[in-house]
Image (tube, rainbow, N blue to C red; front, side):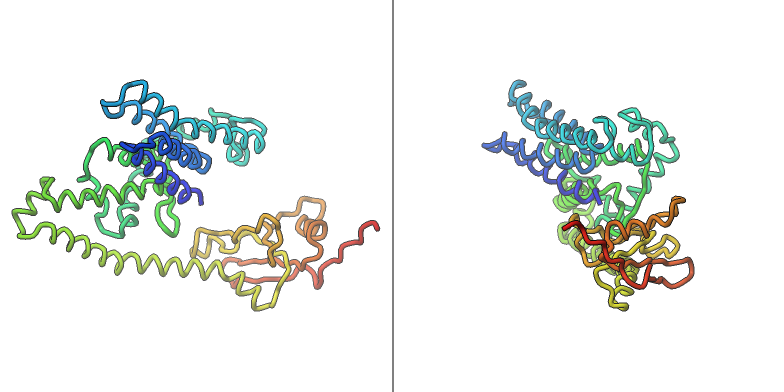
Length: 366
């Protein structure tokens, strides 16, 4: 999925951006931050673009001791790799869809072309769907983040300084994205559409707990008056919440992951059971939605060289000129045996051969 990759490179960009503060080789750190964010832009363009703009603003409004010309130079060094990534993005669009400003995603889904098509997605967001999207993301993240009942609460107590501004900016971008394009999807590992903000939320939560333990907040002052050892009380609370999460949440999620993996393994179990090798498997999904065992409906991707022992091919409907699946098999992979995987509602999964033996390809010219 794109979200974990985006989260990784966004976090790397933030780390490099913060490392540049006071560093001797400031330019290299800023370039590294821009390069990481540029790759994040190629993975998930919209959140990365907003973060790049926020990063430029953060650099231009930097610490007062840096003159405006130096701030502008910093912003250029940071933004240049992002601009190169934008150029690569436009080139990929041109190859995929024939137009630089129309993505392959827009072409595939038949939406309006160009930037207007992307803006059309935001215009369709009403107040009800936008608020439900944000609430769903935050509510689910509250549990998935640290598996605590109130794991987002310490974030609200974190410092609000120049160095924490990028972290808060990332959270703000994630929320704004969910307002503009409402989505509330959940993968086996959590709310994927709020994934980029997870590392920032973890750091903010840790900082909030440290401030409470140190008595820097109203809650911390109250705790210092209520108990003899406030730092030990905060540590005990964090440990207790972690144990609660492991016992009541994490164990259930691991069991869910096991169930999903078992459902994905059904087709492989049938392949092993029948001793099938060097084959094509036509399918409409290896874990149908009706099973409610996994939202990952499709098998793993074939290798780029298409040299796997078993290749998975999406089964096509009859186009009026004969079975396209049979035609594809005979024209492209006649040296392999071919099977159809099916899992009808309420029935067991089956793996049935298309023909008793593979068709031998005709010999080529000498």
